[in-house]
Image 1 (cartoon, rainbow, N blue to C red):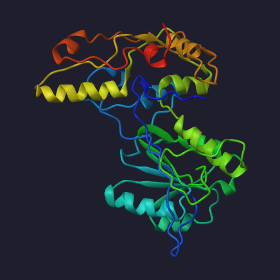
Image 2: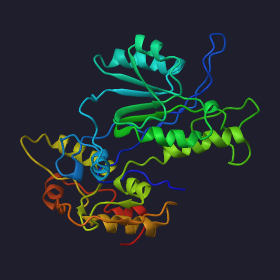
Image 3: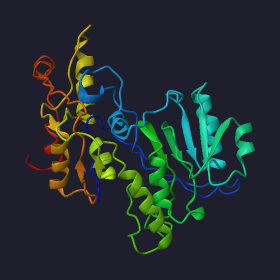
Image 4: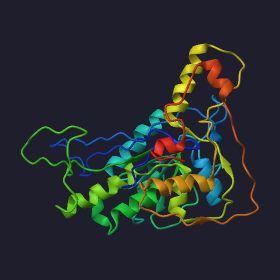
Length: 325
């Protein structure tokens, strides 16, 4: 089970939201299963250098893929995959919260595109290669209209640029309780293999829960990456970035620059060697094939640590993975 989250160039605690897929009925309000995973990131510069600057883990991913987020996409723009009843209500409320933002809706057919346009939702058709990534994505499409629901969720996650949040709406069906008993967020779920219906939902949830946006996860997905293996990366866990930011805030300093990093810089190849050594990922990385792209830099923040009185919870990427370097 690829359940590693929260560490690389800049990783974030994550927020997945899971709610019922059944369309709401006026006479029978539905309860929702909610799991929170991608929340907004602490403000930390990519490559983990200067606290107080904004950046994202997606930058590393976009640099590798050659697909930068379009300048036409605003910081509060939203993509709704499956803009039905729930999705349209989300669009309405999102605009109230974020005046001036753009809302996009991805559908299986063009049947309701005119309706969406009238509602101010920019429609697109599933299956057309995305040219943009969005800071906020919500997946509201039900599993009934597809033969590969987890694959659809995985594809939708590729439309998320790593900022903001990715939200997936699921169902209360996976809870392993069928006697009118109480269920909470962490209540047991039906084992895989017992029911085709819950298998589909649980596998889709797994895709989201394991959608770690670190560069190492992106490289695993690619298999072969056209970047040089000896490029140095400087890493920090998002919990550590947050704790350092808070520690600096409490000092009430002015006009200063501090570094946030774990003081264990690694090459791209070393990162992937540790990932393989951990045994915690099912996918296998093949190779970095680049030879001429730029090298990186090695950061050291001993001065910051001494002045602020701070130490990271995760002293290295290897420590985070539970392996020795």
